[in-house]
Image 1 (cartoon, rainbow, N blue to C red):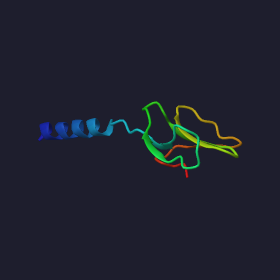
Image 2 (tube, one colour):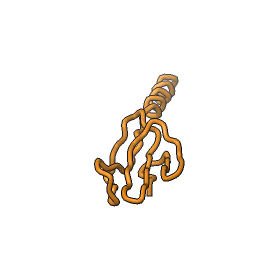
Image 3 (spheres, rainbow, N blue to C red):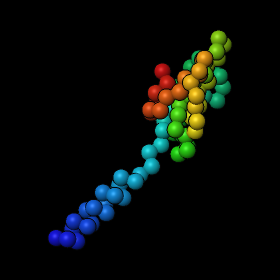
Amino acid sequence: MRTLLLTTVLLVLLCSTQVLTLRCYTCEEADADCKQETECPPSSMYCRTVVTVETVTRTCEEICASGVNVYCCQGDLCEN
C-alpha cells in the first residue's frame, strides 16, 4: 500500500513539472494580417503587439512594457 502511494505521488510530481510554452500570433513582415500562430521559446513570457499607422507587428518576448502603441499580454494567442 505504501509503495502504491509513493508511486502515485511521484507520478503526480513528474506530470506537474511539465514546461508549458506560450503561444502567440507573430509575423515575419509587418502587415495588418499578422496572425501566424507560433509556439514561443520557453524563455518568452509575453506576447507583444506594436501598432503604428502603417504596420502591425507581433512577437514573443521575454520582457515587455506596455506603452503608446505597444501592447503586452501573457495568455495563449491573447493579442487580438
